[in-house]
Image (tube, rainbow, N blue to C red):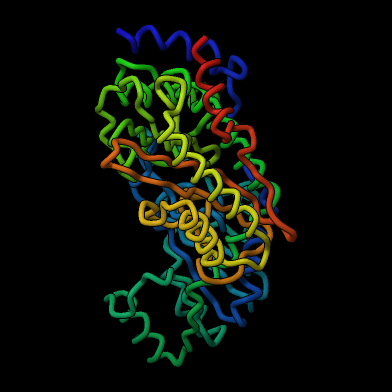
Length: 421
């Protein structure tokens, strides 16, 4: 019954306007520029990259591989991008699956081949078929092939072994560029940041709904329902990940996903949930007191986590490393007496994926977006605390992208109390 009563309260405030607009497509020039950056680093070698999308999305039937999407903007199965730096007329070609009129009756029409399609994806040519069929031919023309597969791909896989054998027989040199795309994707341009900031603004609407909904007598699932309703009402195109709503002792479980417990007076509720917008992710966590006030013990842990965030922020700048920031988090929580209750990393990269590509050991570039999410977990005391924000790394420091979310203890208490009026 409480869920039914809460729904109109969320609906009245969740819509920023009656019809949220779909996200804008990135201009073709963005993809051309990205492809040119890759080509520049191929040492004259030819290369292909295949779509590796699958059905692993949280709120979608098909989720394109992030590398392929970043380079092409294509969100369909079976695609191949061919890069040929020494090509006389065509340096970039996109191969798409052949059309199937019967299948398209079920899944919707696909674009016919045309000059407009070439312009849409920022390539020199669009063709039907598989790009791997021309790979060795292009390798012979260029003299070498660049392997753009991710670092996790093993050389002993059958398809990789077959490629190496064929290349050797044809006298084609293989060059491994397995971390190239990871490095190029680490810093975000203004068009990407605009989509990410919109995802954050939408996520704010969901956390407002969660602040309103965290009252005794309803379930964690009720809170999840309210915040996700608010996400989509505000224009979300998906969820960044499965929403985490952990109350009481469940808040001390890092990735609690059952969301089945009933909220009780005196609980803390860890809400780790965020929206996607145009495939770009947000990632935000707030810890709400069900009673509207933190107890003395809860407040002590919350202030320690808040201070750890502040100490991490003070360390962020272009050139710092993720290990530098981890040490700042650990030093802060050691001083507060909670180091043994901090059982995970301080944060991660965010972009096309909520855990995005990036070098977790090397220097951070300006333009990288990372989370800052220290936490303290006390299952024996029946609660956990996590505060998670997103920051943009700059040359001299950082910009807090989630500054619109209350973060100080007193501000969170006020947020919860005012949300319920």
